[in-house]
Amino acid sequence: MTGGRELRQEAVPGPLPGDTGWLALPDDELVFRIESLGAHHAHDDDLLAVVRSHRHFFIRQEAAKRIRDAERLKAFAGDRHIGQILARQMRRHADIDYLEQLLRESRYLEVRNAAQVQLRLLKETLGRQP
Image (cartoon, rainbow, N blue to C red; front, side, top):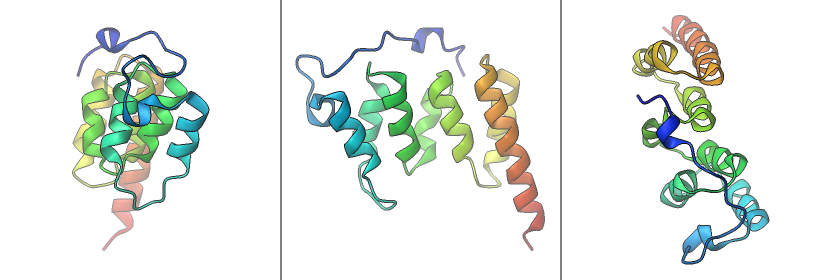
């Protein structure tokens, strides 16, 4: 995991020249498109493009929340805005080690707090299962 400095970027309002797909949409339309996705969508690739983009952190967070495969967010663990979303999506027994790693290595309090809460909830849930 990285400290996140190299992932920090200036937010860009709206699309940049040359943006394609979802990134070519103005901010309001992009947020609407993201928020209107159903639970079983097939747009993780489009959402990852938004997460990788220079759009405002709120838009990037909303995209991260809708990504169905949390494994794809692990590359962004060093980003304090996306790292929080990643921690909250860890729900399997196999994710306990990863959450513990986030607790040890993240330099962002927000990410560590999210990982700590999710780890506690995950351990409680798994402890109740037969």
